[in-house]
Length: 297
Ligand code: NAD
Image (cartoon, rainbow, N blue to C red; front, side):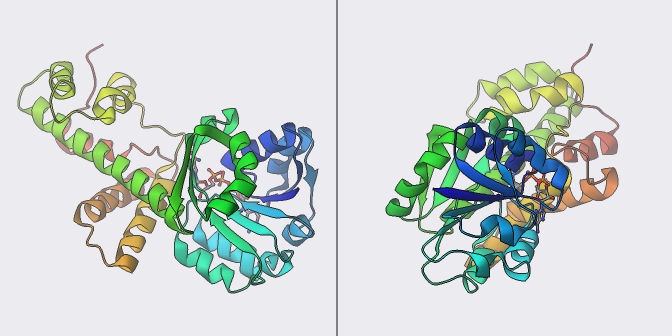
């Protein structure tokens, strides 16, 4: 099986490296040629263009930043038209079904389309322990499963339903995490300003029906070190929230909590910059009340 892989950035660089290291016949391409060196060092071939990369491939995997980049590469860049009849396009980017449908109009009718976005951050891509959320038929998944099992943890592979449902699960998951995180920050700030010790409050909530993994685990780096998690930029978090809101509009679901949280993220991005971490909206509450949510040293 010949595999083409386009988009060798923070996530795709490690994913394609792991495929090459496992002996997969793989050719990579990225607009940033420097980023192709990681998979090439593990045995991947490098292509001079996206069209060259996909020519003759049985499977194309894309790992691109935005729906616009996917459309640019697949449609304007000519990749969709260059795909071999009977081959398979697996989009592992965080995107929306509309973009895949738009691209599909430029594919040969015999090309199969799957969405398989991921979770697990760059460390999961590096170690091959990502969760994968796949939208496709059982037959298509069976064909691609050996590749998924190299890139992700087989115990965290989810067949979400028909094509498009993998994108939906990924967007719902990210939106809910951001919703929980901001609700947790707001609740902690309220209790602290009302005079409760921060850790006493957190432990009381962990032992209550209002517990969550955010309260148990994910909020600790903020409380202990003022760590807003620059490993995932607020600009990408804003993209994910925008796509969740776009999806809600396209399927006719009101998203009152999700759209309020999107506004908080956009305000934090405007105030603290694109590269600030995904937890930076917490700082809006800290700055507005002049109260860092921090354990006493
Ligand atoms: P990234 O910006 O590090 O990498 C994207 C790569 O795509 C870049 O190297 C860029 O040069 C390349 N690219 C852009 N347009 C191109 C084109 N037309 N042709 C060829 N190459 C092109 O992004 P990333 O962090 O690797 O994220 C990729 C996708 O995975 C995004 O959709 C993101 O939301 C999702 N994701 C990221 C994480 C994370 O922790 N970083 C976790 C889960 C999912």
